[in-house]
Amino acid sequence: MAALFGKRLRRSAMTTAVAAAAVAALSASQAPGFTGPQNGRQSAADAAPSPGDSATGNSPYYTDLPPLNSPTAPPSTAPGSPGGTSTGGNEAGIPATVLDAYKKAEAELAATKPGCNLPWQLLAAIGKVESGQARGGNVDANGTTLKPILGPVLDGNGFARITDTDNGAYDGDRTHDRAVGPMQFIPSTWEWSGRDGNGDGKKDPNNIYDAALAAGHYLCRGDRDLSQSGGLHAAILSYNHSQEYLNTVLRWLEYYRKGTHEVPDGTGVQPGGRSDGAPSPSPSPSSPGTTSPSPGSSKPSEPSKPSEPGGGSGTDPSKPGGGGSTSPTPPTATESVAHIEDAGTGALETTAGDAFAERVAVRTENAAGKGVGTIKVKLTVVGDTDLAFSGGFKTVTVVTDSTGKATAPPLRAGEDTGAFTVRATVVDRNLPGLDYTATVSARRADALTRTGSTELTCEAGGQFADPVQVRATYKGDAADGVAATATLIKSKDDATENDKGPYFKDADGKAIRTLKGLKTDGDGRIQLPGIYADDATGTFLLRISTTGGATLTIELKVTAADATATPSASPSAT
Image (cartoon, rainbow, N blue to C red; front, side, top):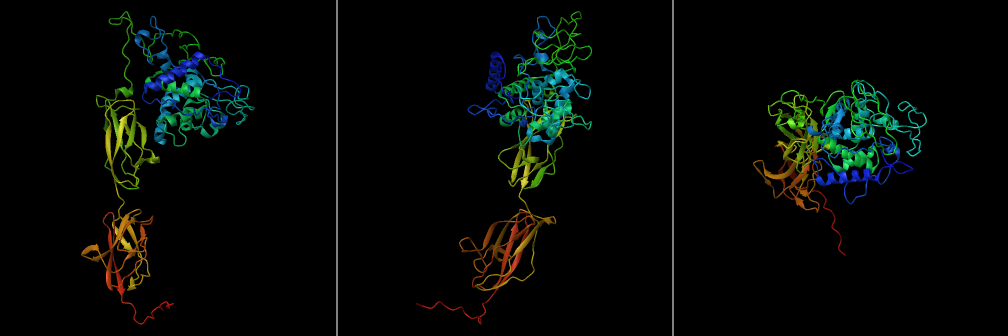
């Protein structure tokens, strides 16, 4: 949500300074995937758009920043341990259903809009600042919030003014609109951007699966590539047009990229600070048997049982080897990938302008050779070529299935011919890539036929009346875009250029006997320009050849000029 209309955001100087310093530090570090503001350019937030141009109507948002320590708290300082005050482990925990919704949205966008390169961590970052991950994951088993999450009334009193657009259907307000649900869509935006993310046949902004998928599509509008800083910043600012909002989301994005873990629904940490200075809404009741830290408290309340980040229980000091220590945090799925292998990709060969019959398929495996699922694989067309994936994308990201296999979108050749490289790498994992060679051959024809049957004759010194038109085919189908050459040759056995007889004219009107750079049209046809005859008489040969080996030889007959024809009058002398 963006800068408030009609009054300044009330944030402490300390919070602003911390946010600015954190973003500057991340930018300087050049952390993988981080894209900070570009120096020397006007901020995209400087020109405030109308409220309807954002997903949220530029409503207030949570301003809490992630901890400066590691996302996964070390065992010695884990919450509940003696002297432990770190909240890094708590903040990195995302409620299970909410986390599942983000990852499912990422997987669908990877399939439907691969060029967008949407990371689920971006959805998590936006979900954090919009609703505190659905107020700590206070959702039912289907992902619907147990209580409505509504932004303030957008009545122009310190906020944007947006009169009612949904007759209260989504926000219960028939006078003004309010942002709705865990991703805080205003009703007018939800009306066209809403999605059914959990397959129940409804588009509900209060459902985290629906809202996360809608947010993904909203961020991926147009031809945005979120792996590039320009596309990423534009997407975030389109959600809520504020530079501080952008900085806050970027901080959480980088935090979640460093490590997260799943926590039970209803137990997520809920934020406290808001961009409008208003108190945080009262937390919804936690799930039975759990407790949630209250906003602004110095440390989380004691859970009913000692727990480790990620939900594992602590070791018992009374048992041998216990001593209060904990087991090492198991590697993430991405960290467990040991190598990337080909998964049965066939020969990548096609003709210019056509799609490849085969698709690149890879498999991510652990050290034991077992496939690893939900791994992001990046595929890139290397070098300067017009070869691209469907939609014209040079880079796509696909997600492996439960067997560790991922299949790229179809590749399509442009007009560039030759051998090109498609490289597969594991995202966020420093492993050797896997290179594929994609070969693009020139368009070709295997047959040429003349479209007319009239004998081609001309008197010496004249012009052939009938144009020469041929049609190229390949395996019986019209061969479009095929390069061809037409040459007036000496004989059937001597294909060198003739030095007498019929000829073409170049742009300057000079006689030439070879035409290069011809190309068939969409129906495989070529019509040659006019053909002229010099003083030589007899039968001459025109040979047309195409890429792919198709040739056609046509006879041209030149007869002597009619001696009985009345000569044209010469200009009278003056």
